[in-house]
Image 1 (cartoon, rainbow, N blue to C red):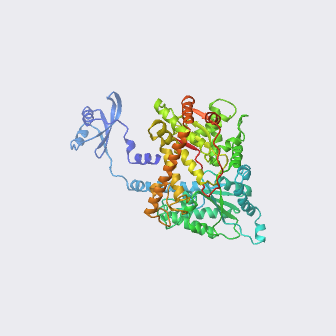
Image 2 (image 1 turned 60 degrees about the vertical axis):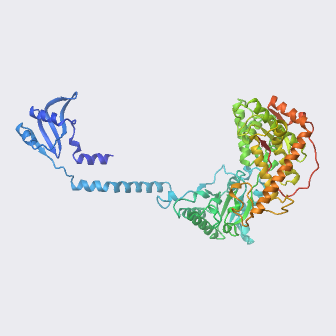
Image 3 (image 1 turned 30 degrees about the vertical axis):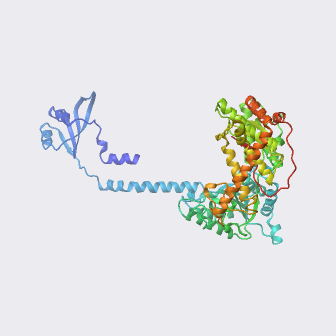
Length: 610
């Protein structure tokens, strides 16, 4: 800014100090002999007065005006004794050269500033390195994460303990010729603690930990991702022994040539560089790569071959004991009330990940804060559970007829869960609108289940269709409230027929049909296409299975019509009924014989929503 001001003054802009006046006013002052001298520069005239004159309320000594093509101006000035001085309007050559070089001076100045800034930040390779480098390094610290900070996951920690021992004492392995895995792939659903496990390995081994998300490799410019991979591995090797952690590796490691994720030159170049870096490790190199993903099915085969990611560690959802240990870890330092039973909380949170349990503990603390109490009570955990599973309470006020329909609908779910021996136990029934649901029937399995029998899946179908059947039986009509139930029931019936071999017509076969994403079709991502005739048979069998489940549900509700009416009336009065109240209203639950399990690992559906 100062440079531009100086250049303007060099061009004569500093001579202009007076106000702009009309040309006629300036001529009048000349004719009245009030002008002492003028400077003429092209069309511009700068004048100085003998004495101050009033112009628009201000006293002026100097003025500025633009003259038209008036050939009489110079003669008139001479006649009235005005001193005349003329200036060349053209800009000097030196000034023109300075103005032409000014943009380049500014660009070079900014570049030099960025270079010096990058050097001050210890970024090697000049200013572009700041664009290249994305990995974050976590140094050794007193507050490092160890296996003690990871609750549960005992099997995963056992597998990773060898990596820790290799980084601590590599000589033990080298003496007997053992080769430690170069790469470890952590597989598991989101929120199960894969990133935490990787940091715990670095903490246990007390080595530098380099972390990056795979999506940070990929940029708009081809070659940037590969350069980042090279730089990350070079930095890790300089600080060996060390650990490189790549989160969500499927973002860059998708299989090539399959169309998954679309064609992307930058992504494939980055993957090729990653393969080269991992394969180029020296056997004595004390650098281990740990990657995490929840989509191992889409990874490139070259990435999974021995010599790259040799070991795969499954990080699954925690079971009851692990959930309790995670709750103990996340409630450490939080004041818990005497009525809080973490074992009971762990039992009702089947299917929760470690991140879900951390969120549950935090929501319970927030609930206690809203109640303005100093301890977290059992009701705070119940409130937090409802908030996570069902959502926040809604301000929606149902009409009486709608509230009655919701009560009948939820009572149908509850009575079917009570009357079906293989169904999961009832925990709560509510007709308070929460989240996207107008009501909910919650069930809790007595223990963690990994296999489900055909009888158990059919029982789940009965419970899911219980609300639909109750509306038709009691009210004589159906409503849109059964949409979620029908969607879940259709998905489950399709899986039973197409994936679990529970069809008499289609037999024990697995068919490539994506029942979770029906809009993707049956052939997307399938090695063997399923014929249209087979798909039609699957749809027919699933529809017949749902029809039989609905008939069984209607029959069971007809037998227990008195309990159905009693429960719906109580719901209209109390809105929410817990397990004890349900047992009082419905009586002891119907018990059934155990069935030999078959392999059908379906996540439990604990909540039927209307």
